[in-house]
Length: 201
Image 1: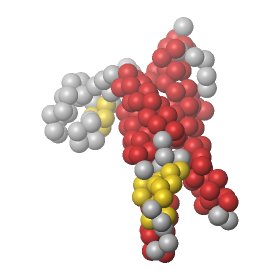
Image 2: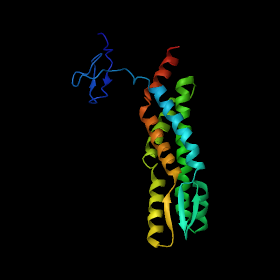
Image 3: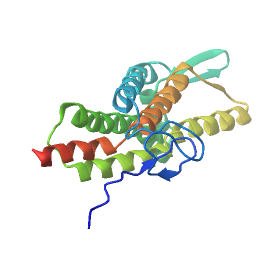
Image 4: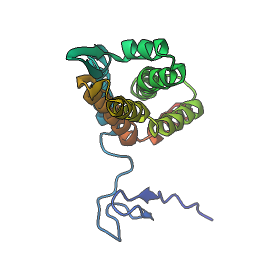
């Protein structure tokens, strides 16, 4: 009995799994074995996120006006200010969401992309697990901006200070956006294609 070597493909248009060789029989979308230029696009998006990471951390993220005096805080100085104000819990959330999470996501994706590009002999299973963790963490990446929004509202309601988001908030949102786009654009099956090639040799 001959084996069936028909390869199934997932349509990017209607998500139909089909054995059609070129076009989806349901919506007519062109089918690809792998997402076209997935690695290159993901690398470009991740590099953009990495570049935006610098102004996100260097520029002020909040502006506070007290009796006509403007005070600007970066992520780091704002974290220290929260600790000095007796709010270590919020300071921890801000530091984790603003510093640890974005850097960890960028480094993690860089390792995965580097493994595919340079054909590094790293565990594909562990890298795939790491990718799913990065995707899960990405759902909480906007937490810091929500915390800033709540703090601004509370401060303004107190009528003692007037607070506004500063330029770094925009760059921080762009870091999150481009990192998420890089993760979504990456076809992780490329990791297993590489392992199959190594097994064949």
